[in-house]
Every structure is written in C-alpha cells, then in structure tokens.
Length: 162
Image (cartoon, rainbow, N blue to C red; front, side):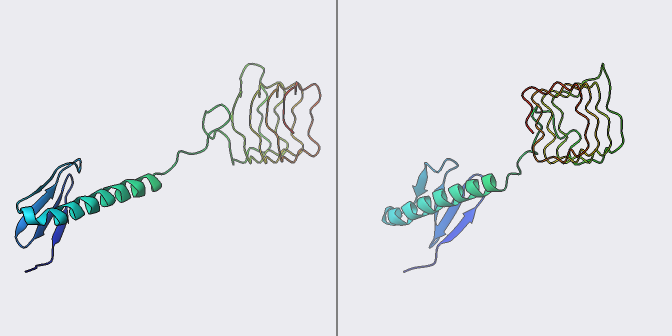
C-alpha cells in the first residue's frame, strides 16, 4: 500500500524510490535495476521518464547555444563593419583590404583609391563621395549602398555586385 515515488536526478544517474525500495537508472539509461519484481512496471515508467528528461535537457542545451558572430565574405570577422571611417585614407598601393567586411560602414568622403578591395563586403554602407579611383573592387558586394557622388574612375569592378 502505496507511498508516492520520489525521483532524484543527479549528474550521471537518476534514482527513484517507492516505498523504501530503490530503482536506479544508469548513466546511459540502459540499465534499470529494481529490488522488487512486482515493481517492474514502475521501473519501466521511471526509465521512460528519465529518457524524456535527458532528451529534453539535451534539446534545451542545443537551443540555448549562442551562435558565432557573422563573418565577412573572407571569413575574417567583422573587420570594419558598423564603424564610422568617414574622411579616412584607405588608399595604399601595397596594403590589401582583400575580403574585409565594411558592412553598414559610414564612409563619407573616405579614400579607397589604389586599394585592393577584392571580395570586400560593403552591404548597406554609406559611401557618399567616397573615392574608389583605380581601386580593385572585383567581386565586392556593394548592395543597398548609398554611393552618391562616389568616384569609380578606372576602378576594376568585374564581378562586383551593386
């Protein structure tokens, strides 16, 4: 005549007790032991509950995992994304900015002349009066940008997305 079962979850196992008789569900939830043959049904229900608990906890851990930040086309991180680089000089015949991320950058009157900007991402960038003269922007992504008054004279732009 019945006492209520008590179920305890520990790090690597689940224990259940009913009327002083213990049931242990092993680490892999494969082994269910019980001391009373009449309690096989209780043991089976505990094993089922333990499996559900384990699956629920695994799903919750997967759902709360924080995704990695988005990366540039090159996979090199956020680089200049979201920064205000207005008026700065990125012109350089020897330095490469190849594959850098300039997403949503504020670059009013910024100079990119003679720069290697192959594969760079300028998505939603503010490039008003920016100077891209003689720059290599092959394969660069320039979608949804504001390029009013920008200088693209002699820029190499094959495969660039505007």
